[in-house]
Structure formats: structure tokens, C-alpha cells
Image 1: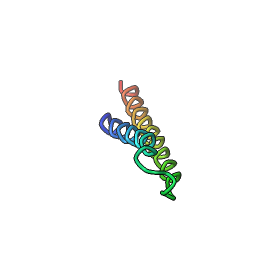
Image 2: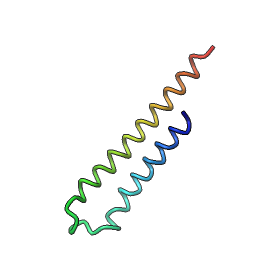
Image 3: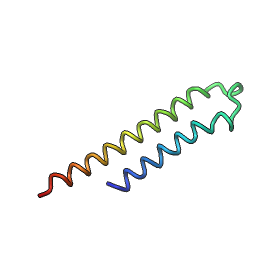
Image 4: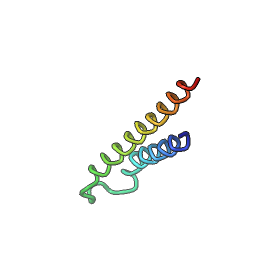
Length: 67
């Protein structure tokens, strides 16, 4: 469970870093889908954080229920 959580955090970090660096790498005026890609990166990053937290919560809940 811990590795799955870590993988989703890495995906989120990469998505957010791409979101921040994308305007410097691509000229936004010549690329028609620029805003869609930026929104997609934000959604991927946010979803990865949520999934990571769900994995952590499930793991914590399982540990808490053991006698």
C-alpha cells in the first residue's frame, strides 16, 4: 500500500511540475489545446493526490482494526 501511495504522489508531483513549466516550454498562442492540457494536468495531479490519500487512509484503517 505504501508503494502505491508513493507512486501516486510522484504522478501528482510530475503533473503539477508540468503544469508550472508548460508555459515556458510551449508557446501558448500557437497551440490551440494549451488550456485543455493545463486543465488536464491539474485534474491528473489532484486525482493522484486524492487516490494517494485514499490508499493511506485504507492502510491506516486496516492497521487500526487489528487487535
